[in-house]
Amino acid sequence: MTLPKETKILIVGLGLIGGSYARALTKRGYAVRAITLEQSSVDFAKNAGIVADAAAEIRTDWIRDADLIVFALYPHTFVEWIEAYGHLLRPGTVITDVTGVKCAIIDRIQSMIPDGVEFIAAHPMAGREVYGVENSDDGIFRGANYIVTPTERNTPDAIALCRSLGETLGFARVSELTPEKHDEMIAFLSQLTHCIAVALMTSNTEPHLVDYTGDSFRDLTRIARINEDMWSELFLLNKKKLVAEIDAFSGELNRMRTYLADENTEKMKEMMRISTARRALFDKKA
Amino acid sequence: MTLPKETKILIVGLGLIGGSYARALTKRGYAVRAITLEQSSVDFAKNAGIVADAAAEIRTDWIRDADLIVFALYPHTFVEWIEAYGHLLRPGTVITDVTGVKCAIIDRIQSMIPDGVEFIAAHPMAGREVYGVENSDDGIFRGANYIVTPTERNTPDAIALCRSLGETLGFARVSELTPEKHDEMIAFLSQLTHCIAVALMTSNTEPHLVDYTGDSFRDLTRIARINEDMWSELFLLNKKKLVAEIDAFSGELNRMRTYLADENTEKMKEMMRISTARRALFDKKA
Image 1 (cartoon, rainbow over the protein chains, first blue to last red):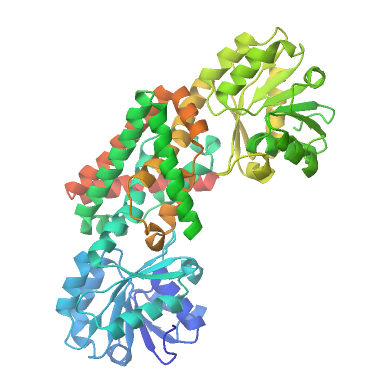
Image 2: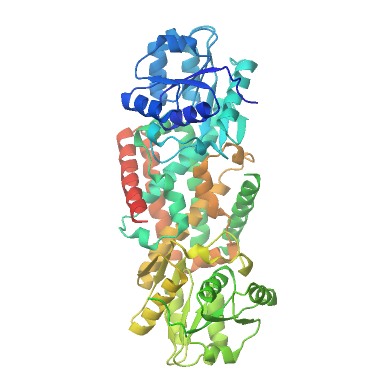
């Protein structure tokens, strides 16, 4: 199901993700406006034709005219925006987000917005190692996952609208998870992997690695180019779950280390067979 | 520099790597023969036209006719082959390998081969998550690194020949490392990354990961589809260095965990800035 064509969409925050949403939605014929902090982002988006209009100031008329508002901001900026301007939201408006953690955000936002405004949270599992609307690219949604995280305060209509948004943007799969389960999955799939990539890059100071490396090290450290402001914020907002995932992973890595130190070949192979079978299933379903 | 066109090349072991060598060298006009274990690999290679000839038996005439013999075997099979047939090698022949560990192999091989035969070790840093000559593909050498690991027993001519082989195969960079430094680099760049990928896949039993994942987890676990016989052998042959690399990495990951648990944002960001700078340099030089 795609979004009704007449849906008026406002994007708040024209960065990499907000810009990519704007591209995808404008390309498919939706009227997309955007409010963002920097005039340079406004200029870029208008020149590139990826929005119908954009402004570097709060446009109350646009906020009240929108059916669907997408907040593509850092978690703390999203909360601050709602604190400052949430009262401007018109009852009947559905708001959604792109935030990478959910438990720390959803209750706060839902408790702050006016009656009749509905916040349905979502997480587009897509990104790049570069920032800003200048690098936006709706191709990043192709083959990717979109996760909607409803709570008991959400209506079926808003959940359906949010799922439609994911499908309209071009995501390959739209799933639903509770905020709790989402944060657990993301701690493992996304935050732990970023911790690993960073730790790999900081654990060796050899300056000529690039001359000796194979593809595996390249693949494992691609995400070691990391936006430290965003990721440290996301890590802290999901601290308990991420610490638990680091510990679980460290336990498994240490199990391999022990088998190796003990020259327990059969146990090493057993771990490898399990990983091979799980990863093969992964490829098959992908 | 490319190999002299008249160089007669024999490949022992037509698996993924041996087959890819055969493809690259035949394509560039060299006369390539191959000896391998399975008749099915011989049939495949001959039908695919990637060798001038091949046999599933020891061909003494081919061994004595060759100028350069490439052993593309598991480490223990390479040692066993030299034990059984090394006396057939003709003085003047240069032999090389593709083995992923060096210290455990080089001295043993050099001590077993007849006088006048020279073993110059090399490691092509390329591979795929599939096996066998049927999956061979010389495209895997494009953009990849080739490492020659000479010892004081090697002559400048043989080192130059081995470097030429790497260039002829289409590798992007040919480097030289001591066997000791090679094994240290490979413990970090290749073996540790495989341990991490395996541990990631064994540390979570959620069956629907694929529905929620982003690219980072896919990238970090691509190599979790792993040939357990080959990799457990490589790990054991480089045990001391790999254990040291696991410990160094675990220390860094634990440092991130501590900063996170302590909510030490500044230290977390500092690690991320270092990893970003190192990885950016990596991309630039790649």
